[in-house]
Length: 540
Image 1 (cartoon, rainbow, N blue to C red):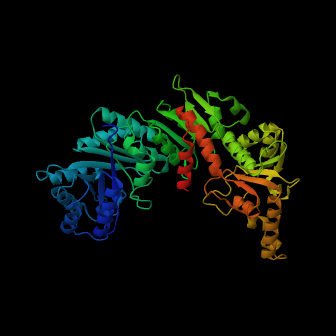
Image 2 (cartoon, rainbow, N blue to C red; image 1 turned 180 degrees about the horizontal axis):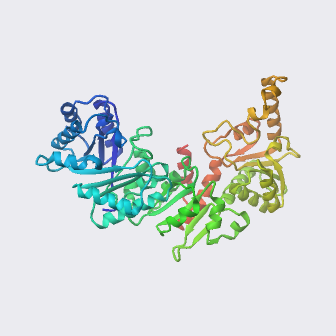
Image 3 (cartoon, helix red, strand yellow; image 1 turned 30 degrees about the vertical axis):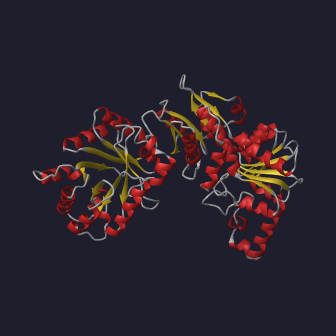
């Protein structure tokens, strides 16, 4: 069963016409099955509407009439629902879904009149949590006992480790030849929907487009097919991913997924929303979970969890790439941030001034986290005079002492311009989508102004203008400004620097270079640089 999971698109239109249009779009988009959600229809006349929906259908269909007590929109009695579902079976629907709570009643209702050819899916939905393996197994047995052709269990992920329990039950069902749909809802359960073929799931759901989800955490059909390449996922497919909190903004799945596919590497790359890094690693200890890109806030935890590290990592104190060594399963930590960012800055600088170097330049790093450490170390190795600016001065001083540099508070950065030709590098998330109007170079206006009483003597416009002039004066002291953020490509910090004629380096360039390093660590193959850069830019 593994490797042949069907992709089902729920039709959630409010009219039959909308549903027919959605079905045509799903067919063109590559769906295998369409789920007709009768409870979403604003008005429903069973014989007329089901005939229209099922006649000349381009796809096999799953008919669902979900009541509100199981997360649906139908508020009437079960008798009406049962009659509609029976009619769908008589009209040749390939699948019908009924909830476990009323499944025995429905089976009794069908007694002696159930048409051949329709598979009965009996479903259970838990919108609060994911039960233990024992409780999930009992649930499977209960669903089987009422005569289900296919078992469907959907739970909710409180933590990403919850998904592992569903995977274990799915594998057990596969071994027992029990067709099962096992899904874990919510952002932390996303990988249950993508790795469905790897663990023998019968079917997974994909929204027709963003905003048309029928349950929390559903990926879109295009993402499932084009980014995660679900049709190529098999039992032996290796799993990689970006581990962070948040991770929804990451373009890692796009760039790595495309790169894997281009070289025929049997792997998938996922966004992994992780709360507890150590717990995540111990839960997904199988060799099939082969490697991870590590982003905020887990880079230091990744170092602590590494069995061995690349020598450079010991100096940086942060890991952004972790792999399981195939020979013994040990976790090996690397850092590709510092090479990616420093090479991007140096190449750009030399493009403007041939022979230019970072040696003896003041190199200001904003942020003292994992990326800040990597950049500070890289700059020091190039002979730069490193200055760390951080919101918490103590953390700035700690990192500055480590790299033999100077520390200042972020609040003082606007007034720091001891010489011309400096380098400024932002490694914080200030200015990242959706907060695209923020800049790390000054506090938001409301914080600067203090209380209303303090504002009364100075016109707001005039003070705004003063702060703007101060920021411009500070930016003019830099020969180059770099921002590690790549969404948006042009942050407010970079836009303001560019307006003043300062050379800028976007986070896209750093991201591509560090991703290339990760790809080579993951696969042992040369990174397809041109493809990776084009892929990232095309999706921006």
